[in-house]
Image (tube, rainbow, N blue to C red; front, side, top):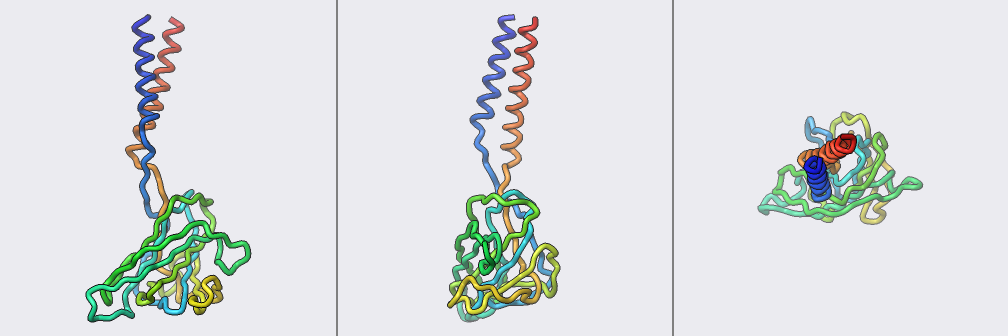
Length: 217
């Protein structure tokens, strides 16, 4: 009986150590993604662009737009621009709009090339099935944002602001030429982390059951 209790105690200790010592490592995965069936460009020059989307996850930890260097200098090997991208509860020009997150990223590409421009931030809690907005602008508007020719993303619309150099938050025009090509990210635990924590919890449950059985004996 003493050996049984000792074994139960060691099993419980090992399971507790497994649970407590396992860091909750996480990874970013794509939540929303609009695929470009063909290219239609919309210039950043004098505009900020915006796209609404409906999240299916409980957090958003980044987003990006698909761009093309179409206004650059063909003689240069590569050109860069800084993109500012923000996550909002609504268009900034709408009453009650709240900025949830945002950041900047350097976008680099040779003339004529396509590139994804992604910005990441710490996970922000959101409500699945709720509409949110992305807004973006470039410091050097040599890129065009890729769009659909029509509305092939059924859970959102696009918009742009007039003369973003003067007023960056007034979005007065909707539906540029369809939805923009974009993607959003959500952060989830890595499968290995989930397995380790789950194994530890199962071990704790088994040790507790054995301890109860030993008391009965």
